[in-house]
Structures are given as structure tokens and as C-alpha cells.
Length: 169
Image 1 (cartoon, rainbow, N blue to C red):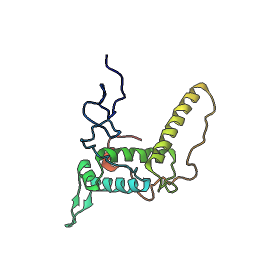
Image 2 (cartoon, rainbow, N blue to C red; image 1 turned 180 degrees about the vertical axis):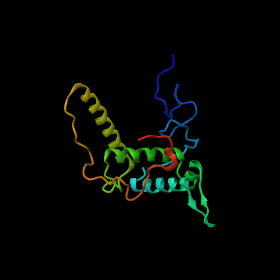
Image 3 (cartoon, rainbow, N blue to C red; image 1 turned 90 degrees about the vertical axis):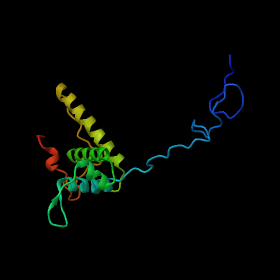
Image 4 (cartoon, rainbow, N blue to C red; image 1 turned 135 degrees about the vertical axis):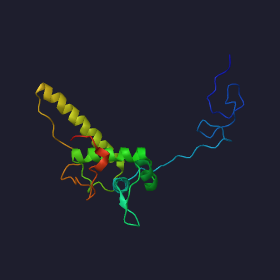
């Protein structure tokens, strides 16, 4: 039976990491770690601008010759510099934020996690209200980030255009 030693130990005792010493990450010191893609979370004002630009490119802009030029969602996302998957997610969060009365003006410089937390909380409250309606209890109408909401994202419209074809409200 081999004696127990902690993994990642740089000692030459039996049971030590056979690939060599580590740098506290579990990977050998001679192998490079993949750099983190991003360390900073985006701000709400930034994502509003990027999503607005993305949708504008998709819905069409006038070209140099005055003709309407439309890009696919994927091409528009590439031009904006953010993945389509992220932009789709941001658009969903913005729409839920508007639906639940999130105050975009007061939270424009907040990180998008604030909006995600608000939406998550409001969805939980809505689900609780559904459960209370079935039992006949009074719902709790308190909200985080209360006050008047800026439901038009500072003048930007995300109503959808062709993106929402076939969706009824």
C-alpha cells in the first residue's frame, strides 16, 4: 500500500504528483494555463448600447448608397464584438427587467448581475403569487430597485421588429 500524500505536493515521496511540481492550480508548472476570457462583468448601460446596436444592424441600416443593408443576427453580433449567445441573453434580461419594472436610469452604471438578481427575485415573487392565488393569500408587492422605472431603456426600443414574428403578447 502506498503512503498518502496530498496531490500537488512537490516532494519526491511515493504518491506525489507524477507530472512534476504545480503552481497551486493542479496543472504542472511547465504547462501554460489558459487565460481567463474576461474578469470584469459588463455594465448595464454598456449592454443596452450594444444590444441596441445589434438589433439596429439586424433590422437594417442605410448604406452609403442609401439602400437598406441588413445583417444576420450572427453577423451583426460579430460587428458589435459580442457573441450572439451573450447578446440574446442580455436582450432577454433587458426585456424581463422592463416587464418587472427595473429602474434602468438609477442602475445604468451597475453591473449586469444586479439586473440578473432583480429578474430572478421578481420571477420568484411572481411564482409565489401564483401559488398564493391558488390558496387565496394576499401577495407581497414589495420590489427591489423600486421607484419609477425607465421602461424605454433611455430611449432605446427593444420591441423586436422581425425578431418577434409569431410571438403574441
